[in-house]
Length: 252
Image (cartoon, one colour):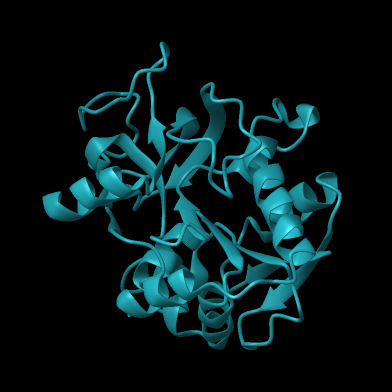
């Protein structure tokens, strides 16, 4: 089984993602931004970095790259796509996940360890998680998750909030000024998925905590979740998902 990692000009976590996938036991390949051909992969990761220099705003130019045509079609067919940090920003700009990522509330780049907690353990991106807080790093200047109140309520209702920033005791850091909420995200949201549940984005970097030699392998809970879900999708014959296609189309 192959899992693809997109490389944009300015990506800087693509190698980390490729390594994490190798640790998870799959064959990772690089997908170049100039080609819409996904080479028959079973899942896609959009990695962190500064795609196209993050000119104008993070993710807005990468959203129009040829590879994103392939990613959109793959998602519409039911394939699993995970956007990490800059990858989350690209997915949001492409309309593949709801909401937007704004400048950090502090107006400063944030680079440190944070704690996030899965809101649910039955999604393709959390199925291998323990349910306890996951300690992984962030590195971003535009990670403040924003959506209008109606959309936020809809996400809560439909189980599309996948991760929240939490304090040491595991409770959500709902106050945007809480130090445990590193960017002022509304409702402490660190990651969301689309309505169909097969496309997700989060700001923290699970791929940077994929082996104990790195200080922790907490992030492998999320990488393994993606791999297991992709393997299951392949085993089922890559079933098309009308719900996924409708969710993608609704966000265009």
